Length: 472
Image 1 (cartoon, rainbow, N blue to C red):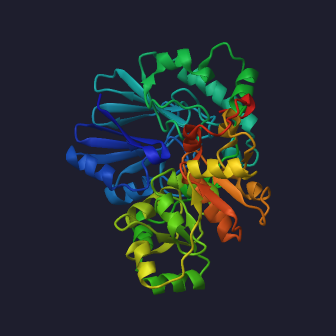
Image 2: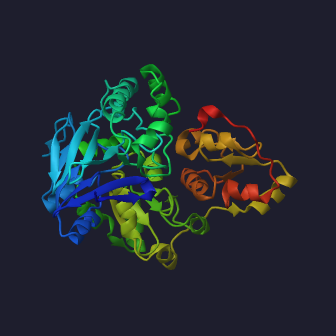
Image 3: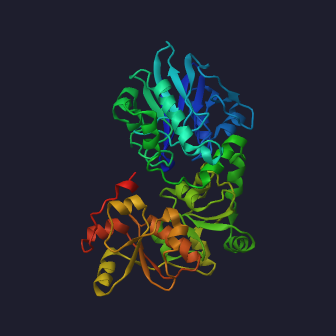
């Protein structure tokens, strides 16, 4: 059976494409839909259905634009209540894609409408299951997200539903089935996902802790809920976009890719509430940037950090990017619902310099320079990695101030005191400092290369303390 996984690593997302006899279907597409349309054209096929496993929280699905552009029908599982025309399938209902069959298996737990799709080939043989966020490789979907949208759905209730779905709907299926999940390692929709993006169901029954047949429902609920961290604030906002509908991606791109001269860019920044996001490399940013701009580099977990650090998806944004990457930035913002970019700096940061505009910078030191400073006097070091990273290994005397909880971390900082700030490799420390510098903190110094460089330097004492309760 022809099943193609279309994986997007920056948000650890997997969409799926199947085609048979001139008909195709897409499962859980991303916001930019042209690649799916082009893929079907390559097979001389028409996209008949867009199957959604659930209302996603970590990204905005491309189902509505696909429907508009191809005439396909969108399919949700039982209990879904979309705010637009869609097929709400019955449990065990079968849809035909050419000679293939797609069987609906309602598997509530991650959300109440969560659905697994059983794939059968032209001979009726069961091939695999597209599981959405019900079952991952090495993990299952977290059951605490829907409660942020539906108040009476507690995480305990959802975990109980998930237990029943796994035991009664998934585990009785054949061991030979291939598991096709919606996410891999790095996604915030689970807590212990494998780097592998497919596996057999039989192997998952052996190694996935959540499929341990010896777990009682009470034990399962405790196990699933232990170690969950607060989800990013944009998650419930994305769910609502996926339920109610959203603006066309074409319109979002057109608005966001409006080229602005340095003078126009500065005027818009002064006249609106727009936040300036500079998406260049962290080292380039530290050497010079537009005052009060925030650095979130495009060559990192860009969308995740935007969603974590900017609480309102309707925030107006002005973009500074390397030339030629502006559309990429707007696309990756829109994937997670940030549709309100209102333009970019034409010619990149160089045009700002050429126009003679005011610049700011972030002071930096490398590991060797910091070791010399630390040998001569006592210094304050901030480690902005996650608590789990810090708990596993950190510099002795460094204080943990995680970027993902920056408003709490900011309370630990004395504006009059100098701090040396590091993360793992240098990406997050610059994000952290840029945000605080825009808020008036001027005594933060970036450590180039982060903790990795400090370890390699060999002149810093490293803790061997491990905190099991924070490791995910």
